[in-house]
Image (cartoon, rainbow, N blue to C red; front, top):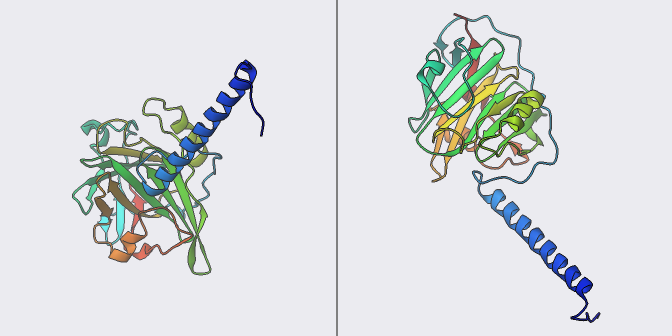
Length: 259
């Protein structure tokens, strides 16, 4: 045991620095524990940025409106992704209703897909975009992040989990970097108007399968398509497990249409 001289200022400063470091480490562990149990709280600091790898089927030329499990997405001028939904921005969109009567607006501008959730409460949104062998979960809550599943030998296996970023409600630089590196962005739930989340997706989407889930801070959940089975809904929410079973036959296929 080393006995420090109370008159030795150097030893005193060393002890204070040690105590401060221990407090910081304990605080970080407490934040990480909260993040693991609450999907709408601020997630841990990201360490790396993983590029998305999803490749969609060839661009479709179908020009119908909504046919069976196909959703026709009309062309329109791009909106501003700020969490403020104005009539002029989304006037040309096609709208669908979730299980809790929240509304989803869909439109595109050439190769870019836009989706807006119009609800009445802040929460966690998952926009899922899937091909026959890859499914991306694009998540917006207190931060943005994506998870990727790959279809291997009849099983959807987790390729990478969420890598969180973009916590600022006022600084757009991280979101623009995410759009450049991973092909998507959205406003977080605390930016813009309450219950409004807008997405911009430059990943290949025309001909892809889509589904949306929404979990509010009061733990009320909503889904689209609204007629998803209970089993299909269970795989759209919660932290990503090592394996999932995505029922793509119950999702919608996006098809672009022009003016």
